[in-house]
Amino acid sequence: MSSSFGQVFRIHTYGESHGGGVGVIIDGCPARVPLTEAEIQRELDRRRPGQSEIVTPRKEADTAEILSGLHDGITLGTPISILVRNTDQRPGSYDEMAVKYRPSHADYTYDAKYGIRAPSGGGRASARETIGRVAAAAVARQVLDQIHPGIEILAWVKTIQHLEAKVDPSTVTAADIESNIVRTGDPEMVEPMIEHIKTIRSQGNSVGGVVECVIRNCPAGLGEPIFDKLEADLAKAMLSLPATKGFEIGSGFAGTLLTGAEHNDPFRNIDGKIRTTSNRSGGVQGGISNGEDIVFRVAFKPTATIMTSQETVTNQGENTELQGKGRHDACVLPRAVPIVEAMATLVLTDHLLRQRATSL
Image (cartoon, rainbow, N blue to C red; front, top):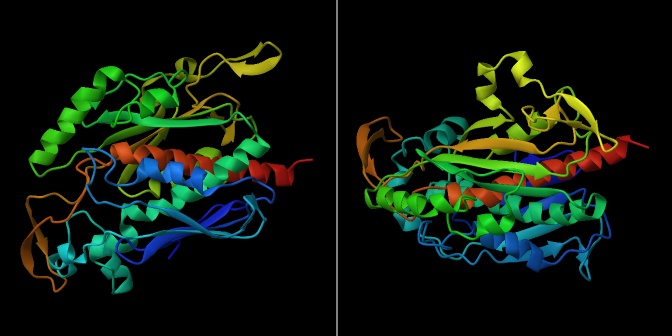
């Protein structure tokens, strides 16, 4: 099973949703980078369950424990191990699901691949696995601040089903996004989105949507053609997240409606720097960053576990029905925002370190 990500700044996540704990091992973090558990905890608190009335009520403190790689708050250059213990497991909620496959979950495919699975909470297929990614990205953030200060990575909820927020990627702030429990940058859409999630949840149903992300002040020259193009690694990072079904950068699919004359980004020398006067490329050309804002979007499907009866089969192939149980998000989008930011941070850190390794 591939549980590793990155080339130079490399992470390996471990643990199941209802096991003893989840976490990450980080290899390739430079030495002498200041790091505290508080910096990691701040990001974990943004993705933890039970943080608001519109997310899963599972109660987990998600307290980070740094087990290795640090001395007196400074990285040693050796592997960093971070553990978050699970404390609110309820495996009894999954007894029926041990023999009945949940529609659109990984239950059947894990059985088909391995012949065994951890049924409680989805095991490795659970979004709880992303704790390790977020913890690793908090470390990566400290590395970014050391080697290239000023890079800013912000994500927000752009759509929830048919509701669309109007957010300017060039001006939205972290304060705008974190000022509301939906994590959208459009004040006008906060209440409609909250009410829509509550309505859907009261029906025992779920909804999906789109998270948009911007990377500002990224230097030109990041990306490793041909197969490790910057947008290719961003796409892999985002599509490796649970519940993702789509990725687009810059103009994305809408760019197919334009002509070349309409889509091209003209170059100009502005104040001694090569810039583009538009950004339909989304900050990446030829797989390499061009110094403009990198803007991309990630589509998340509706949460697979719903509280209404659905047709399915047992692990013996018998037709049956299943109604969801346990504690689940009716919409994953608000908690997905820090996870999207985390994966973008990991990609940028890895590519910056790769660039340093290949440049004089």
